[in-house]
Length: 626
Image (cartoon, rainbow, N blue to C red):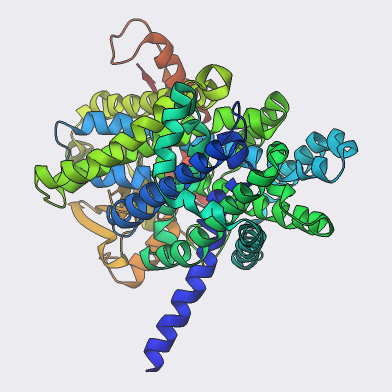
């Protein structure tokens, strides 16, 4: 009985916490979605009811059925998100993987761009409530938005460990506020509920033709936060995410959307900002404060997800190594990436200054998430066939509907490319080029790096030379690079310096296509001979790499045939200087070779990335032409 109660309490606490992280983005859509869905059309009863019907069925089909029932099933050992899905598909590594790989990279690039767009449109739309309170406040919207965003990014290095526990309750208050404001307006005009009938959605297209179809780009804004359900799967689990949606988020959103619609039927002139218009005048200031807090939390959730996505890309060898700082000792998912934070801050502020208002930002916002959703649908379709072993008929009957919906939304959003949609597409293209260049460059180094041509055993035999100075009771630890796991260059360093430690430990890192690797599966120890040993440390793409800590644990488990004093051992790492040259014909264009060389020079040093002690680590430089 006590265990059931404890499980129930844990599920409830996770559900509330999930509200702040998972549903912050989709929960702030009522600030602008209705207005954007009717942009360019009169707020007539037929149009209002048609848009409400489209919103209702979009939330049901895309979020409730597609994501909650099917997409969440495609987890990688409990983890979700486009890169976790890509790692899951990589286990098969079939002919289709190359296409899926490109789709995954594009999705990752678009999600990184979403880390700029979501804070921009969310905070701007909340602060635009000042204009509803008084038109004289309009001049303060942009400066105040920039100030809030600057503060948000400035405090990222502190992490959210201390204030994160308040996110869930604040977003819960936000959804309750949405429900009450919308519910009261529905009571004033209950006829709006007839929009639940899909007839009004069909009638909307018949009446407005291609202009009505174009408005689907605005309707899509109500589901833009749906990808967070999948990306944050590992933090909360399926049950809390589903409970949070069906019992809190969906009712709150529908009540508010229909409440705005009910008010528009009576006051079509309030289409300028229907969200703030449905609030009583005495509640305008408190609503502005609650909305601002909600948008800040939604922005924080997206920024944190971007950091997590960057960490996955680095560990999966899809992106150059960046400094990754763990901001919480208890929660693995809370990380801070300084360089990515700077890029997001600069990009977000540029977007706010460039587009100036939430309506303009909405043009850039929808297509990025739309393409990610389409990519995820394609990848999960492949998972259903290969991993779930569904029949072709079952796969087609279910996922053809979702693909048609995604493509229909994409067609409507495509018109926004020239008015702002090009921004996330350009950023995603840059990210894909960087990731492809890095991945192909690392593959080239693995295949052609000159130390791979030398037999490691031959080098070890040379360490028996009598002229070498033997150092008893000493241990030297070689940390190999991903492209030279032999450690040959490091062993050459000993030969050139005519020293021979008693124990030589070659440590290499292998990132598996799983999010986490248990401690029992972490270590793979191999005895090479002549006092030389190899230790392969296996990590997941969500794990935190700390080599000294891993060696200390391995020593306690008595894996080594000698006693390893991690606090006294000397570490050696290799720093490769890559130079692009036209003399060699490689897999890359020359400009990509130059880009790869630049990325190698600016990647974080192994000393910092692996958390090695600076005072006992020697860096050895090597040179390689590509």
